[in-house]
Length: 227
Ligand code: CTP
Ligand code: CA
Image 1 (cartoon, rainbow, N blue to C red):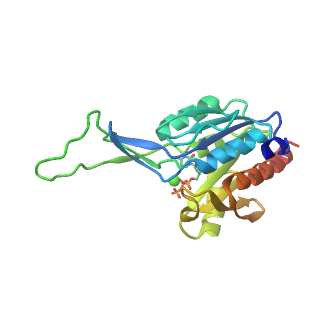
Image 2: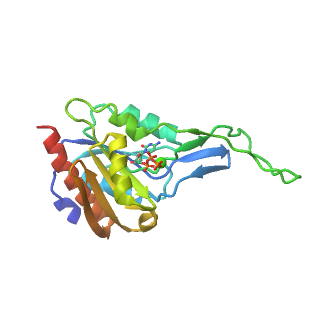
Image 3: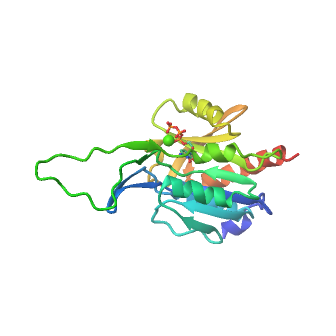
């Protein structure tokens, strides 16, 4: 019921969100992926919808149901996620990249299942870099500042330092930082918001609670960029 009483700070806005991990095939039965349950991205999608936005969620493989009223498109690989995001980009006011995108895909993936070798020899995987979806969207920000781009970063150390420099490197107005082992698979988290003025800590809370705070912060900044 609380959902119905959330302030409609994103009424009339279109919000595009990526969530979950990506899956990069090695062969038809195995692949490499990143740690991500999708819970934070889905919570952000739900909070944006509660705030009155029209929400499109591009999701890698997760065990979660689409939040009520959210349009979800399922993808597996980073390239599929990139293409789906680009196809949905027109007219979006906000882009929030919560997905844990695999930085590399397998260059020599196999069409057939790879079999164990009798002599114990192992496959030698080669990798190539995936497109950076967030950087690609940020590069297409228009003169009105749309889509307003928000990134997420899960670090294992030096979060304050890495968060601030990653925001600048990506060329985005807002970056949300968290520490990997404090968030993966969990129902709550601690996040730090990095913007041009520095950083603000949002203390440990449930992911939906944090997502609602984040949406409120985004809506304030969005109002400023569109002046
Ligand atoms: N991201 C993306 N596409 C990629 C990689 C990352 O859209 N190919 C987005 C993530 O969704 C996240 C942000 O970029 O919002 C930061 O991801 P992160 O992995 O922390 O940054 P990288 O630039 O990949 O740097 P690192 O070497 O630390 O992994
Ligand atoms: Ca990365």
